[in-house]
Every structure is written in structure tokens, then in C-alpha cells.
Image (cartoon, rainbow, N blue to C red; front, side, top):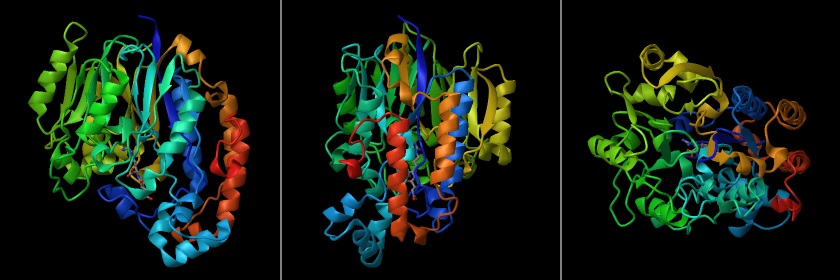
Amino acid sequence: MSSAFEANCDGLVGPTHSYVGLSPGNLASTKNAGEVSNPRGAALEGLLKMRRLADLGIPQFVLPPHERPAVSLLKSLGFSGSDETVIETAWKDAPALAAAACSASPMWAANAATVTPSADAGDGRVHLTPANLLTNLHRSLEGPQTTRALRRLFPDESRFAVHDPLPAQPHFADEGAANHVRLCAEHGAPGVNLFVWGREAWGHWDGRFPARQTREAFEAIQRRHGAARAVFPQQGKAAIEGGAFHNDVVCVGTRECLFFHERAFEDRALTEREVRTAAEDLFEPAFVEVSEAELPMADLVASYLFNSQLLVVPGEDRLVLLAPAETRDNPNAFAVAEGLASSNGPIGRVEYVDVRQSMRNGGGPACLRLRVVLTDDELEATNPAQRFTPGLHTTLADWITRRYRDRLAPADLADPLLLTESREALDELTTILDLGGGFYPFQR
Ligand code: SUG
């Protein structure tokens, strides 16, 4: 076993960050539809969160935003003419399609891919399957560009296998690492992989909100990656009904600790038994459960307590929970969070981070990052220009301040100037992050 780290790859918020209400079952997205957003503020908040991690000594990377508006989607749906005409006509004739083409949703990198570290993979490489995200139209556009971005960040095929997304078919609906948890004794040691699914491909789903992850999608990913010690718990139906559209809204885990709400799993006792069996000879799992009485679902969704980053911080024995500021604002969630630190459990302290712009679309600190466990040698083999450093922070903050608007109403998405501004910004970013030629569709 070599030493290994859990690197975090955060999605940089794009210039079209907006509140259009595109995600049914994501209560924040629905509630804030029509509000004015601040793309510049959102992107700067994201950078500050990356800085917090980097300052704690945790490897941090930047994933680039995608090209939006996605003119190619609108063209494929029959809108024609110049790019400006396509956008203008689409907003006039089919505003729901136009809005979907504008979302900055690739910022939520927890949905970028499912990752199996080399310690768990059949062939000793790091495996990544980009998510097809096909439950929501605006997110179903992400897979191909995410694949390109991950191949740029992890270019060495002898160490990394970046697969294609699963077939774009409802049987294989896949939302990536937001529904995957890995537990272990320490990052470089073999782990237990929890693949949490919401519905079965051939089953009947009658929930009020969509179940976005199928069991069959995760079984395929587990086979592709050769992921060891896999368990497949069912997501709690009551959690999805209550607004937890991904498992990472009700559960977070790292090292030996699974921190979760009592509604997280459909069969909580079975999940615990299966995890214990899979962990045998490796480590003793610690189940830290919060009851509905302590934290009702409504407070859970408002506070996003479980959408925190649970971190192994160099030099600290116990884990650190990096929670959204909304957790501090919610009395019930705050009491639970502070209670963790004062108990003698695996979580030693809680910090809070302000990602309010993202939170208003239902994306907390954990949604903004993709965790990739890497050995020293694997870390060395990544694209160095995407490694977050204080220098890159300064460069990106300057780029955002020059290039992003600080006010974007949904109606502004129809402004053809926004397309030009976004493309110019992304063109410059291609150089900053050394993304290579033809990275974006407009550059090809
Ligand atoms: O898929 N929101 C995202 C939030 C993703 C959060 N990710 C995790 N839980 N890992 C989603 O629902 C809203 C976009 C809008 O409404 O404009 C959106 O896509």
C-alpha cells in the first residue's frame, strides 16, 4: 500500500449561472426559479472553498465550466441560422429548451463521474465513468464534455481509465459520485464501495419526484471498474420524496465513518449489515446516524448538513466536517453539527463555508467537488495547470472579475452578447488551465 490522498476536483462556476428552476425534486432549484443570480459572486465563492481545502493541505484541482448556451443542442432540435439567431428564436419559440441550453450545472462536479481508486480497481488503475445525467435535459448535455475534461486532467492511460458515459438510456440513468460512498481504514488501503440507487430499471417508479440513479447503472459501473467490496443499498424513498434527489443530500462518508440521516437508506439495518460484512478484515465502520426527531427532513434540506465535505486533514486525528453556512443558520442542524464535535465520535470539528449562490440551486459544498483518491505517483501524472495553488487562485479571481457578470436575471440568458462574453472567457481559460486545442465545441 502506498500513501494516498483524497484529491478534490471542483467545478468552476460558469458565466451563465442562473436560477431557472430546471430540476424537479430539487426543492431549492424550484423555489428560487426566477431570482436574479450573481455568476461572478458564485464563481468567487467556489474559488474560496477550493482555497480552504488547499490551505488545509488537501490536493485540489479545477474542472472547467462547459460552453453555454449550448447552441449545438438547439441546432440539433431544428433551430437554424447564425448562433445568435438560434438563441433568439429558441427563446421566442421554445423557452424551456433555451433555458436548458444555458444551465451552468457542470459546476456540480459530484455528478461528473463515479470514481474507483486504484486500490479498489481490478486492474490497478484509477477508473472514472462520467455520468450520463439523463434524468434532466439540462444535465444530459454534460457527459461528452466532462469526458473530455477528465481525460485532460488524467491523461496517462497507464494509470487512469476514463470510460465513456453509460448508454444514454433510462435503464442506465446515472448521476455519478453523488450516490457513491467509499469507506476505508485510510485512503490508500482497499475500501468498501457503497453504490446507492433510487430505482430498478425494470421496476415501476411511482414517486412524486424522479429517482435519478438506477441499480443497473451502478452494477455496470462496478463491473467496468472491477470495484472491489461493493454493496448496493437502496436510497430511502422517503428521502427522495422529502427533496433528497441525490444520496449526498442525506449521507456523507469518508475513511471509516458513515454519517447519515435515518431516512437515507430504504433498509437501514440491511445496509449496516452489508457494510460490516464487506469491511471485515479491513476496518471497523463507524455509523453516525441522525434521527428524524433531531433533524426533520425539512431542516435537513434547508440546511444541507449532510452535503458537507468530510475531510481527513493532515495532522488531525479526527475528521473535519466542512458544512455549508446554511447549517449554521438552522438551529436544529447547528445543534447536530456542534454535537458531533463535542461527542467522542470520528468527527472532531465542524467548519462552515459560504457557497450560497450554489446552494440556491440545491448544490452544497459536497456537490461542488469530485473526490479522486490518488497515490503520489498518480498525483504527479495529472495536468499541473489544473492544480489549485494560491497563484492560480489569483489568476482565476482576476479572470472571473473581468469576465463574469454580477447580475443575471433569467431573461438575460436570451441576450446574444452573453454567448460572445462566455466564449471569450472560456477561450482565455483554455490557456490558463492548459486544456489543449479544440477543448470547447466553439474552438473546433
Ligand atoms: O442536478 N441543480 C443540480 C444540483 C446538483 C447537486 N448535486 C449533488 N447533490 N451532488 C441538480 O439538481 C439546478 C439548475 C437550475 O434549476 O437552473 C440544478 O441543476
